Each structure stands twice: as C-alpha cells, then as structure tokens.
Length: 354
Image 1 (cartoon, one colour):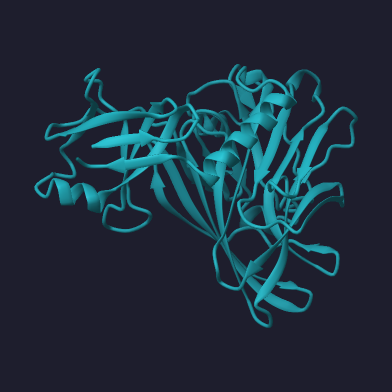
Image 2 (cartoon, rainbow, N blue to C red):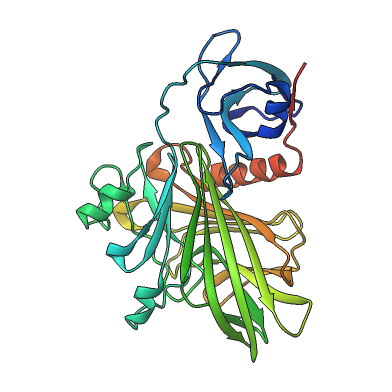
C-alpha cells in the first residue's frame, strides 16, 4: 500500500483515511481485529484506527503519518496483533457538569453546553467554548474531576469567555439582521472515539427563526495533531429552500486583538488581546464554500453563509494557545489557517495498491 503526497505541503501528524472496502479487496482474508500496519523502510508500526462513522461496519482505516512534500511512503499490512495505541482524541457527555459535551485532542480542548444548564435559567452560553492546553495528554476527565478548570495547574485551563455569543466558531441562523440562537443541545451520539479521531453528533430541538420552526443536527469531528474541528451542520426548516446563517467568533472589548476577515478565501481569524497572565488565544474559521460577507456585529466577527434545507454544510473551526509553545503569535496563526485551507482545496494525498 502506497501513500503519495503530490502537494508542496509537508504534512506532520496527518490523519489519512484509507477505505476499508479497498483494503479488504486487496486482502480478502484480513482479520479486522488482528492486523498491524508498518512503514517498510523503518519497520516502525504506524498508529491506526478503525473508523465506523456510527455504523456497525468499518468505513475507513485511519493512519497518522509524517509525509514530506512530493514523496511516497510504502506501508505493509501484516497479519499480526497490533500494539495498543495511546489515545490522542477523546470526547464524552458530562452529566456531572450540567450536560456539557467536551472533547479534545493532543493540541486543544472544546465543549458545548447542554440542556441542564439551559433549564437552570443561566444557559445563555450557546457558543463553542475553548479549553487551552500546554500538554499532549488528554485532560478533560482530570479537569472535571478536579473541578478547578479556571486555574492553570500546569497543563492549561478554561479562561475563554463565551457569553451570549457564538464563542469560538459556532453557527446560527441569521434573518432580519438578527442572530437566532438555537437552544442548547438535547441529544448526543458518539460515532467514533479515538485513538486518532473523535466524532460525535448533537441534536437540537426546534426553535423559532423569524416565525419559522427550525431544527438542526451538528456533527463534530476532531483529528489528532490538528487545531481545527470539522463541523457538519444540517438545518431542517419549513418555508424556504435557503436559510441565511452566520459563523461567529466573540470579539473582546480590550485593545490589542488582531483580526482577519477574508471573504474570498473564506478565512476568519482572531488573535485575541492577551488575557493577563493567562496568555493569548487565537481562534479561526475556514469555510470551503461560498461566503457572502464578513463583518463585525453584536460584539462578534461574523461570516455570512447560506444553508440549503436538509443539505449538510461543512466548515472548520478551532483555536490555539500561545503558552502551548507551538503557535505563539498572530502571523503564525494566520499562516496555519491559510495552509489548512490549501490542504482542503488540494490535499495531494493519494492512496494506491500496487
């Protein structure tokens, strides 16, 4: 099996999908529970994950590779028991904290707010929250158990403020120059949960948008080694074929932040003002499809898009923390987002069997 990178991008810790159907075609007797993948030159075992996408059958094999520009890597599939791989992604429902759903990888963590918070009467945080990290370890469980995640205990913290906004790249319907926020999510389903990709789906009960009932589902997928989530949202509504929507990032009142509103490239970036001793968070959105406009409104940076009734809409959103020591300034963050957009347009990754 050959993984070919035809692009001029040097990939590091890239998660690559390989069709399980194609693998089985080449190796019809392969035992899905008893094989390993090695790189031919080094004979090093390659981390992999069987991706089910919520099904009962395998959809893909995910591998994580470093792959330089315009090079090819040969992988062997061996009929041997694989090693146990250290999980690099994780997500779970958090009933002990008012129905949060939290997820993370080896770079960054996030959470969405659930129904229990809304029923308390204080659930006005409808956006995506960021938990910054300075470790590649998975920290969600420990932070919830400790209960003091607003303090940095050496691995990061939660100092990101969402409030009555879309937070770090959430999406909402937008009509009559108003944002029509959904309620907090009501149901969840974990589709895959590591070690290289965590994917889950959130359902939202109907809410009213300019007199019209709207429902939504959001599927979030986070790979190891990246700062960005893939968001797939479907809106179901009644009277029209298209529903205007906005993807937003909260704008801080303090001076010193740096923003990029690039409509043509579909990149929305905000390097926040430094938050005292807590450091600086960069938040970004990449929209592969058409963007109608970007603007500052309601203390948020907003990217205006259009959603087709019951047709999945895909975009990417995420964050980085300067104290993690990898992306430490606005220029690096914008460069990261531009490179990721380039990957989306032409990844250059090709999988073949010879």
